[in-house]
Length: 165
Picture (cartoon, one colour):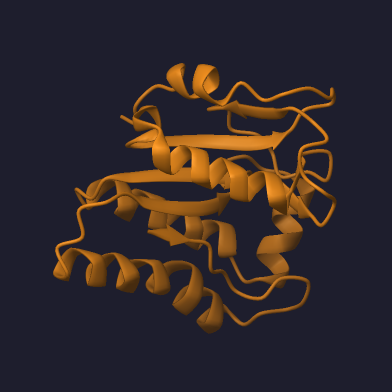
């Protein structure tokens, strides 16, 4: 199961909408999965920068009424739920074609910044690969495009991920 929904971007969103979408929407989906006895993996797309202060994070929290705060809280709920999950935090999304740059995959807590970006196509590939790889189970990872071109060594990078505490 893949959850990528979020409050509308690029414009002001009231806190009620942000809370209902970025927090309660995830919890409701998680509860429905548990009620249906879902036994697969719950993949959740989040944003880098939910734990690091930056100008970009401040602006997004201002426009989207604490969206990064709600997203940090939902991560805690997801980890405590007992459901098999993978949390993938992504950089600023671009509409550029994917596959042009190697993807940086790690567990650093990057600041939200325009320099940390990633093509939507590359995010989709990361989700597909993460669903298939047991080394992403119960882990949180961050993905952004690297500065250099070249293939991404998905399995090698996934094998290095440490489980969430």
